[in-house]
View (cartoon, rainbow, N blue to C red):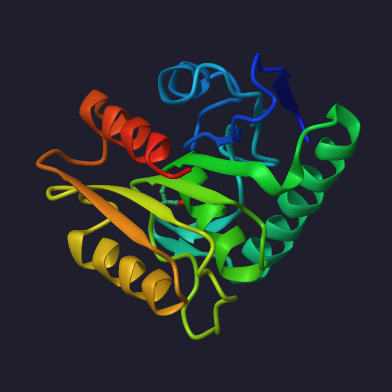
Length: 201
Ligand code: MLT
């Protein structure tokens, strides 16, 4: 997959894997990584799907209606890619924290839904429920931060709460940070995610 890898100054810091929103690129979230954990190594990935020229991580049939078959296929593609990148770049595969926004949060959420130990932790900015009706892996060692907007027209507060419930039921320690805003990623939400990550270890 197209990506940027930046070696961090602290090899014991979490390795941040970044997933952009629809229409973004692997450059978009680099400032976020810098704000959240400046000494971390960073693997920033570009989605392999194009929707009217806009990169995404999986196909959708309409806004909020995912192509489930493609979601499953692309989730495996991303999972395999992280494993291969860990070998190629020599980072600690067991210390990977995903940071995703919107469609990128949804692919990161899908990793959590489908693969045990895919991530050490996840920061999901404005995620949706990636799939329903499946049994999640045991997530008791995988804490999750959800950044949600009370006025988000794409990821409704109800859906954010549903995601929180599904992850908690799988054992995850979930922290939901609420903003009064909509779908946009706010500075205060990023700051809250940084504080949350610092408090993990
Ligand atoms: C998705 O398709 O993943 C969500 O609707 C968010 C987005 O608009 O990218």
